[in-house]
Amino acid sequence: MARSGPQKIPGASQAYFYGAGRFSGTDMEVNCGVVHTTEGRSLPTYADSQGRPGAMAPTVTGVPDMPARRIRWYQHYDVDESARALANKLGGVETNTANTFQMELVGTCDAKHAKAWNGKRAGIDYIYWPDAPEWALAEVAVPVRWLNQHHGIPLTCVEDWLAYGSDSRRPGVTPASYGASPARMSHAEWRAFTGWCGHQHVPENDHGDPGSMDFARVIVLAKTPTTGGKEKDMDQAEMYAAVWEQDKVPAPDTSATKATNPRWAPVSYLREIYDAVSGLRGDVAKLRAEVRDLKKGA
Image (tube, rainbow, N blue to C red; front, side, top):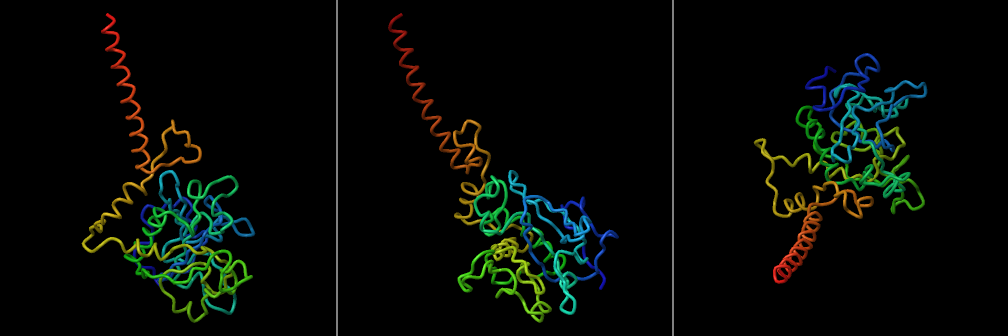
């Protein structure tokens, strides 16, 4: 099937592009997306057992830039070209070539890394995707929205995203999202599927990523812009959250807690400024009193 529509994701780096002859895939017309987590903290080489970089690559990889609160996208295959990150068994259904756009997110969905990982801190040095910050989900929503607008992938997703760990419905089975989990689609369900799902939902695969990532929130954020090209007006609560809670900035170098709290919300800065001004007022009052005493002595 011939490719149609734009094939390069706007703003995505092509530095690690593996299509166009190196590992060219099958032409298709995407109608669904699969989300993975890399379970690492840097851009993978996606090498196979023969050491060939890119031989197991998805369509794109999102690398969080934590200080900038951005995701840097790297494109490995054209949008309508099959990628290579899914297992595909003989005699079953097609996976990589089943009109599937594949998105890898650098980070983890493993609960053992929910707070820290080899000395690094979740939310500061890397993303634990089941508890991803709002800015990260909004960044994922950008290509999801673009793919809907230019390639028609529906802004819908599966409902059941099982945790990469335990599941109360299946006691003693860990991790719940691995193997023949309740979330895994049948061959018929996969053939009919459109929208977004996780690696844990794809048949013929046993991986459980991206765990309990809140992809429903990504879909909501992808739908946020209203008609007419204008952004939706924020209500008072959203505006307060955006200005005073979410838009964190580097802590001042003079902060005693900079090592453990490197980014502050603006409201914290206001408190710091208030305390500093209050101290200055006291100092000025003392200086004025000393000046008056000096004048009297003169």
